[in-house]
View 1 (cartoon, one colour):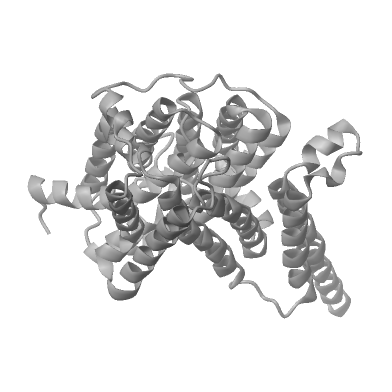
View 2 (cartoon, rainbow, N blue to C red; view 1 turned 45 degrees about the vertical axis):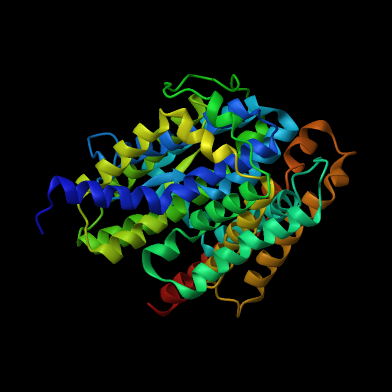
Length: 436
């Protein structure tokens, strides 16, 4: 099918709309949770939109060093939300960006070898990690739904009604619509909730009025990077989970385009993500990964042209240098965001459960891996003083529920699965030698 400039533009807008809610809600959640000012929050939203566009173009532009060259759209990974909030509140905003930069370097370094490392991260591990991350997000959603932790009207009938009303609108759209309308249900729910909030006097337009029409991305606008071991380990784990998910997206798109992906293609794709993550750290944005909703949109539309994705990426970069557009999203009341967060963070847990659905639970080992990793991750999150009396070096590594849960899953998978497979291979080879 020959695509005119008008068709390419309209298809590009459709891709922007499909991922816009996801691109916008992440900075709103993180910014509100780490105490950013309205001006800083406007920057965070704008730079996130801009960097989503740049990350997309880096991935679609295939060259000798990076870029898988498939029609894939990138945005901030939801897997990073809870870790970034935890790092920001415990170590400071600078530590978030130091950890993001180091995780990007890690991805670039392991890109060539990731196909060999990936065996340490089967569904039983990645599913457990994503489930742990989702569980730690739910308290954030409920606090926002009640009006935001520390707010004067926390838990008021007005806030609770508005939060659950937003959630109800999202559920109704999912129940009674399909196709594109369903794909932007979160965005519609947030807009509808904000409109209701406006009519009852809960919306303040001053951040929009005070923001400028144009700005350029700035290095270290929010904070200069700081480097601490626990945040770095946490964000590296987030990056690994994202790479595992991205690998599935790459193969899905390869099948759609009837292209056979080589190890070199995958390495270039991983390097593009590593670069995008590093740029996110330098410009105080986020780590970036493939957005699966845009893969679904390609499948629905049947249009697989890279020109459409280049156009979508360019549109995102253009939107990102207009702060007034970003400022509009900062006036959304916390309770409206909270209602949307319940749906979105619940879906993070559901994604983890879906990954675990591919696991063979007929073996006791896999049951123990999931049970103990989620149990340890949740336990440390709920009782952070558990390791308070351990030596400083050990305590630093054990104070994050996500890190503890992830390490538990990785180690137990080695013990129950990888070592077992190795033992079985040794026995098989011994039997073959005995019979020959």
